Image (cartoon, rainbow, N blue to C red):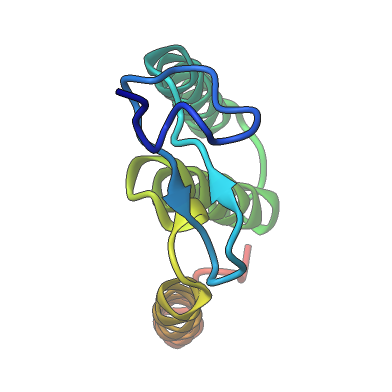
Length: 119
């Protein structure tokens, strides 16, 4: 008996069922374990870069934006792959982006209040 995954075009692994993404009626395959490992290695490399930047003697005016950038990249990778937002409705992505924008805004206000950017 043929299953629904047998008829999905471009679906390589019959053990992982396709998921309808973004309401467009097309099917998208979830990441394989190999892709999760690749993302985890990328996250580890970014974390190593963050630690390396912390121990260098660069000014706070460069350190804080660099750490912000790395944090946003790590947030995006975790949310898109590990939390599967890449494969879910865009509404969920909007909620996370709104939360991220609120958190970054609050954090910048706190940093400005404590004069963290003045060298």
